[in-house]
Image 1 (cartoon, rainbow, N blue to C red):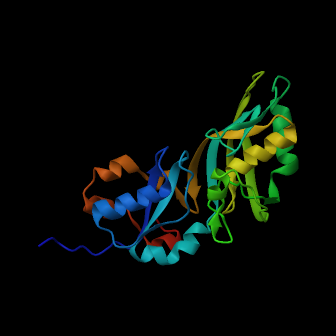
Image 2 (cartoon, helix red, strand yellow; image 1 turned 45 degrees about the vertical axis):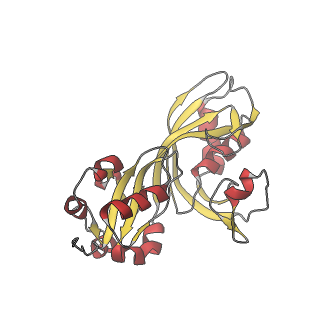
Image 3 (cartoon, rainbow, N blue to C red; image 1 turned 180 degrees about the vertical axis):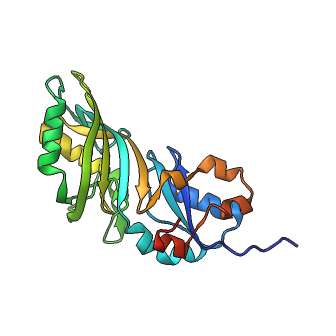
Length: 245
């Protein structure tokens, strides 16, 4: 007769690898370690990496609090081409020269339009539902529909490096923002404002609320651990809510 374990209650910070949907990580942990209740505190796009908060046991009951935390990201924007998905995985929809694009122009555009309060239109390639239908399913069929703009706040949008190029200039960045902000859309809209087109070519979440990547364990490493070791990495619900971890 197999042993029955009680689920740990809390938040397990995971460092998500690229190329894996967030729901696959949830499902894998549930099946491999026998957790009865598993959820997440805000997904990452499959191509993105970084902090993914896995909710275990009673941790699933505070999902709204976890998802509501501010987020911090680092990544890279590539100028010169816009894509259907607003990231590097999509098909190119327009191309422009970036020969005359300067770091000063990028910084000025960001400060003028992309810091503080703003409204974003969710991309078609997203999990947002319209009349019960996820937008990405419509997008795959080549359909597009009206989307209501969402209010978000950008606390910080800083360029940390700029690499000029006549065809595909790139900028590394750091963004700190409220929940629900699409970083892909920031990149796309910035490219439209500059007249060059742009898309996101790398993204890594470094913080969610008070939890940072320093608290996270790489997903591949978790799969090699015994269940008891994983439980020791879980932040208890009360500790999370009090910020004492």
